Image: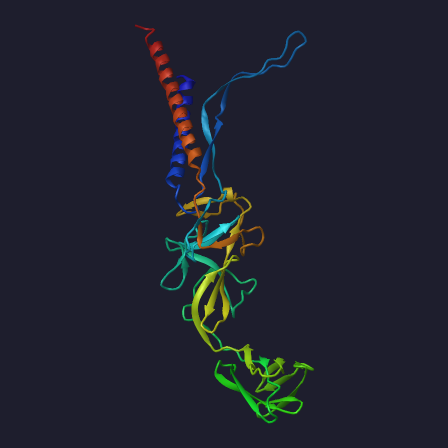
Length: 385
């Protein structure tokens, strides 16, 4: 039988594979995080018709004569170039700006994906659209402990920020120097103990001949002024709270002295959350505190092109991808995280439609090889009539 017949068949098969890959790329043009693939061809084994010969004294050498036996697929490669950003405004929609993959747990194995369309399920776990559990580190006392293993990220619904005892406060404003000696001004400030229980801290300012005396009923300190300015910074300790009085002035006619900021807080409940560029899940509590609740884990590969597609825009490691390097966003060559946006497919439609034309014409050309070979065989059979 003619070798060209089988060469044409191999061409049909190879170009059919190219059509399949191109069609899949076009079908996933709007798939979040999809990476386009491309087909590479290579020549099949060539049959040696005549060996090469060495040059002789009275004759030159000859080159080998070979006839190719067709074409075959050498590789189907995945293009991991970043896709364009699509803003969604949804805080759990995440995009990796740079290299790296999200880690998810599905079917008892850890998989990797660029699709960051996440949400929280009824149990408070961060999941993908098909229910795979997003992996990361859970914070302990508001901090990520180095060296801990990755696990499922869970939003601690009903979490409580503990109360914080007040240890420092400050006073600011003006104590009027035109007050009569012996007149008093009383100022109060709400402070908190270690359990978050509130109490009133009360300071009484009494006008003296040289300035003002400040007392909480137990301890007393004196403030002196020259041209309205204190001659030295002063503090008073009341019930374990150190009150900074250096912000007070002593000009006439203005009575604006007040007790201001303090560093204590009551216990608070979780109100909202946000995801930051380093993948941290930060919670905001009703008492004004913020704390890191968890952090997403990202993975990098030496050869991402060696990853095996596992469906649902997921990948699993293969023998040629290398082992994953797990780290936080922005570390060890891993990209940052953009919240409220998704990475779109990196399919280039103009290139894919061009590939369709190339594959179609290649398929047609190889089909002509088969029909031409068939006509030659027909001529051979017609030699004997």
